[in-house]
Length: 270
Image (cartoon, rainbow, N blue to C red; front, top):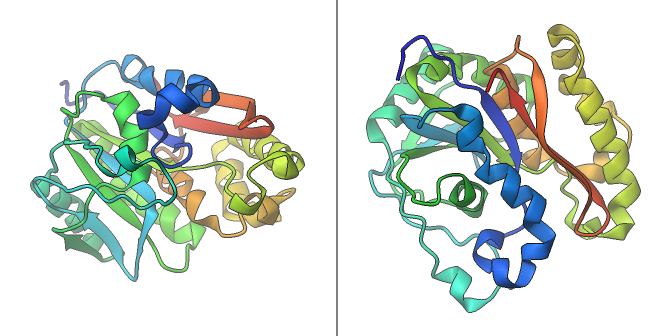
């Protein structure tokens, strides 16, 4: 890979639970999302050295990095068919990359810790299986930090920006709408209001875009869309790592699960 190539970054709406392993029963609900994820290798144009997944399903007092060479699986969901607790996504880890990222964050004033036991949660493997189904690209997971402060996560994204020229694909994995108590027609209006605001914010000039995202909770229906913002915060990291670059929308639908508006975003060229 050319050292001059700068990879894009992504914020992906990763769907619900282990959906890629249930396509025989839920495939009609995930057709558009699945297609958008499978198209990412074409968009990126090269096979990355590794993927850094900022997962909405992991939080720590400090930022945490998975550092196992062979990460196990973490079935962090309930009520799904028995076979979904046996699925394997056997992508390797990247301990040296995890240590490198820790150094970047430590040096930038946002201390990070390594976790050699952490497995792939469904925010990681459900998003990455359609992208790299052969599980042949190493993955490091990065947690969120307690407090979920958007400025902190934007700052960490800025510290991670050099990775993009080192062949590392940065992916924030969450959901643009995440209110599980209204993950149906009851949440339709709020999801459309917030998603419309979010897509409009992405089209703003960079400084205005950053300012808008910092104040995301003032957006229309913000707290209805995200009663707790852990599924939105990976967006801040992806944005911070490509803060001055244009955003595009590689995935959007207005009737996810029948009625919800959801989107994914890419920052930088593809």
